[in-house]
Every structure is written in C-alpha cells, then in structure tokens.
Picture (cartoon, rainbow, N blue to C red):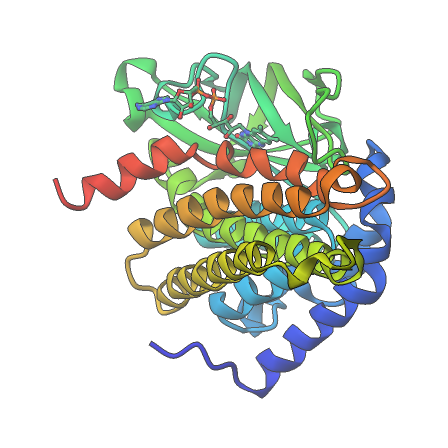
Length: 377
Ligand SMILES: Cc1cc2nc3c(=O)[nH]c(=O)nc-3n(C[C@H](O)[C@H](O)[C@H](O)COP(=O)(O)OP(=O)(O)OC[C@H]3O[C@@H](n4cnc5c(N)ncnc54)[C@H](O)[C@@H]3O)c2cc1C
C-alpha cells in the first residue's frame, strides 16, 4: 500500500490547498451563513477540474485515482466544510451515473456535472426510512415507455438547488431490497416539488429539504442500471461517499486544530501563553494523533477503492473513526479557546455545530458498526 502521489496528483493537491487557503477559508463563515447554495464556488470547483478527478480522461475527467480525490477533498474541507460536502455528494451521484448508467445516460448527464454546470443530488432517505434504506416506499410504476414515480425523499442535500436527482424507488414493494431501482429525475419535470429548506444545527451553506414526487413521469432511458439493482448502486456509491465524509471530517479537524493552536499560542493566562501548560499541550497531542489516524484510515480506504479492491469495511471504519474523532477534536478546540471559542466571532463553534451531522448522514455511525461487524460474523 503506497500513499505517495505522482506529480500530477501532487499538483492537483497543491492547487486544492491553495484554493482552500486563499479562496475558501476566508469565506467559510459567509458561505455558512448564506442559507443558499454557493453557486460561485460550485462553478469554480468545476473549472478547476475537481469534480472530474476520478473519471477517466476519455470521459472528460482527469483520470486520477480515488486516493487523489480523497486527499483533495480533505484539503477543500479544511477551507470550508460546506464546500467539501458539496464536492462529495455531487461527485458521488455523478460517478454512480457514470458507473451504472447506460452510455447514453452517461454522455447526457456526466459532462455537465463534471464541468460544474449542473448540480446532482442523491435521494435515498425517506421520512420513515433512514437507516432501513431497504424499506423505502417511493414507488415506480411502469407506464407508457417509462415509469410514474410517487414518494417523498427526506433531508436531501442541495434540495431545490439541484438540477438532477438520483432517486431510489421500488418497482415492487413485495420484492423488498430487490425491487429498488435508480432513476435520474430532472428539476422542472411535472410533479416534482420541494419542502421548505430544513432549519439545521449547522452546515447551512447547503440547502437540505424534502424532494416530493407526485406522478413524476421518468422515461425508461433514465433508469440507471437494471430494475432491482438500485440498492446495490446506492450502497456502492456510499462506499465512496463514506470515504468522502471521512476526508471531510479530517479536513474539519485540521482546521479546528490550526485555529485553536493559533489562539493557544497567543492567549495569556497566569502570565504565560496557555500552550505552555502541559495539559494544553496534551490536548493538542491527542488532537494531532486523531487527525493522523483519521487521515491514514481514509487514505487506506481510498487506496483500496482506487485499485478496485473491496473497501466496504475500510470505508465504514474510516467514516466511523474520522467522524467520531472529528467531533471530539472540534469540541476540544472550543474548550481550548474558552468563552471565545463558544462565541460566533471565532470559527470553531461553527465547526462543532457542523461536524455532528457527519456522524449521522451516509449511514449513521451505529450503521457503520453493523457494516464492520458483518465482516467477522
Ligand atoms: C444534514 C443531512 C444531510 C443529509 N443528506 C442526505 C442526502 O443527500 N440524501 C439522502 O438520501 N439522505 C440524506 N440524509 C439522511 C441521512 O442519510 C439519514 O439521516 C441517515 O441515514 C439516518 O436515518 P434517520 O435520520 O432516519 O435515522 P434512523 O434510521 O431513524 O435512526 C435513528 C437512530 O437509531 C439508530 N439505529 C437505526 N437502526 C439501527 C440498528 N439496526 N442498530 C442500531 N442502531 C440503529 C441510528 O443509528 C440512529 O442513532 C441527510 C441527513 C442529514 C442530517
């Protein structure tokens, strides 16, 4: 296993680092407070080629590996967690279409998404079916050369900002998981509407809302893969998605570490900088260890995925450990900064409010433990 990057991958990592430092980090609060999709940033990432990292050159991508993608995502999240999440979800839906969709479907939707011209959401969860994704009730009924879809999807990242939705629906509830099928639905189609943007604890630079399908007609050619393989597509996409969340969490931890360390080197109490107290140094030692462990676990899962090797367990381990550690690190960063850390004038309270959701979406951390346990049962 080798995490060394070649020259091209190093260049794109450096580009991401510069972009995160110079363009994203100064705007993290502004983006988060906007309660609207950050379209300018979304398009800039497309222009930089970041959505095309894992796509082959013949498909218009950069032809790089999943390890490079995870490393770039970590850099981006260090500058702005909303942007990191945006890149992860958008790439996940686009790549699932490329992997599982027909050639025609791929040629129609993938290039615009890679270029950052169109935004692609992932719609699996429902109000009554979150962890129990195999139970989803959104129904697709075959009719007139296509399918009529009815159902409600819940907590969908991007909400009405998205142009395209990768929607999971069942063609036959009796078949349970074997009836779940994936479809691409476009904004603007009759019968598609949206709930009000959810009021969230954090991560407010991206809209989250219900996506409501009422008699939405989807042509047969917009089915992604065969009937019945939708859950396989969703879970396969989530292997990559979870590595993306792990990278996102690692980036957020690095930001929390940097912000609180800078403060600890300046804050004077009892006549000395607080970093000179050994108990403070131990906090930073623990934080550094958690960041390093998370980054390495994420790279291991990403390396396996890039080689086309099984990585479901490793993706879950990376997601579980990185997001649990990130919650601890962000909380410690606030603690280091005392009352200032709790105030909105400093960035760390924002990191702490955001990071909680990384333990919930793309499979809660309890579900990650179930996935991991299956490998030794
Ligand atoms: C900010 C945000 C963005 C999201 N974006 C998207 C999106 O873009 N697309 C999408 O499809 N979904 C999205 N989701 C939904 C997310 O994937 C679900 O919230 C998640 O899968 C958990 O489902 P749930 O909230 O219904 O919790 P539930 O499944 O009801 O779980 C509640 C609690 O019970 C636990 N639990 C459930 N089953 C078990 C079990 N078998 N064993 C042990 N514990 C269990 C869970 O771990 C959790 O602690 C998003 C959620 C959030 C918060």
